[in-house]
Image 1 (cartoon, one colour):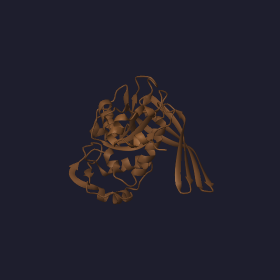
Image 2 (spheres, one colour):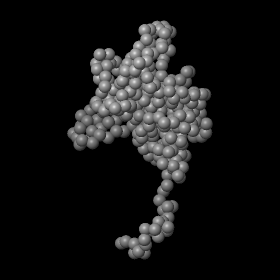
Image 3 (cartoon, one colour):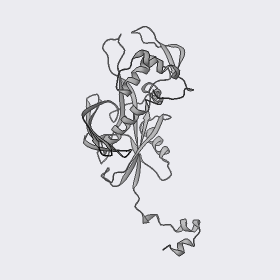
Image 4 (cartoon, one colour):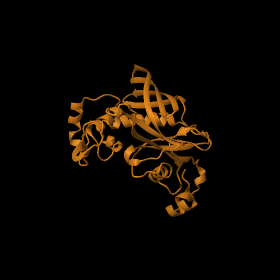
Length: 296
């Protein structure tokens, strides 16, 4: 039966009398997963340095997980939107702004934070290491990312299939090595794909190993049909550098001729050359902002 007295109220009167304490109110945070492309050291100055995917981590200075590495994050304030909160987080903790950002997923496991029920909206950001000039410190570092599939099991079911993967993700910065192991189960049931992720071992704070594997898969998938890879490059780049970035993100080598044919409309040739002294100068290109994305 409807509450007659409540039904008789105008919306303004209803809102003035509304009691927010009637329902449980969890805290809400945002977490920033920022990627860049770094370079590995090469002794031969005539040889191009190899590229590697890197993720930015911050060392926590308070409990819980004090002195444990995590993604930069913050609690959302009452007057902040999600986008305001993630931008404020990145600007205050990483000291960059105006970067590529996209919302990934909202994490709401009741036990994900030992302080209580805290829901987190995760965002993925892509930055050029050369352009952003993020200053590393003892508590803020770029970690190289290496992903290994330890085991893989595919099983057909009556309604589809069930695929189970155990994945190891090793993060390295200087002498610091963070090892993470997750189990990802993808189950197709009557046309619906359900994904479960379980942390088997993690040197990261909270459930950030889940955020990491989710963002890595999103990044790899999106590079196939969007131009997001260009956010990891400076404004001007060589075609070899561009190919290296795609190879890092897709985790496979690409044939030079095929690659250049596919990206021909994505780039514009400039009148500039790179200044690397170890080899013959190469022509520099820039992203074609009028390019219409399609499957890479």
